[in-house]
Length: 77
Image 1 (tube, one colour):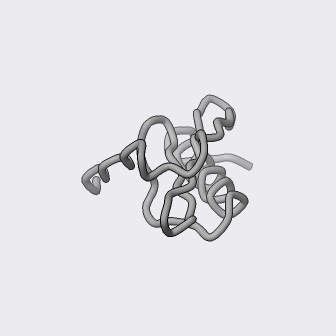
Image 2: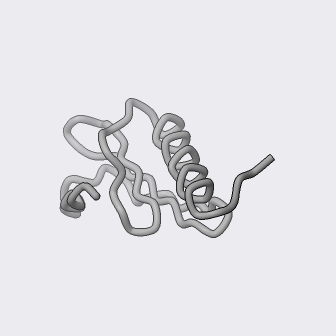
Image 3: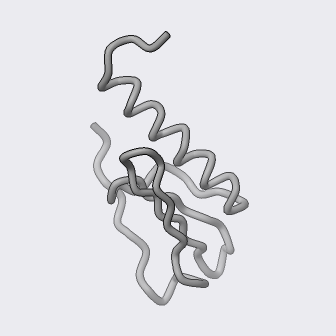
């Protein structure tokens, strides 16, 4: 398991984070200054990389939630 990245400092945030529920998971999207890039945090774990748009960050969170759910459940059909 990769080490967790440090969460951004409050002064780096451009706006308040946006929260979503993805099944049983919590997804939090934040935009950082001065890069204006987005980060995604799922269930309190910051995902790798940054994203050019909020939509890209959201998609990464959805993919990660699906990956976690797939790994923890019997094979899906």
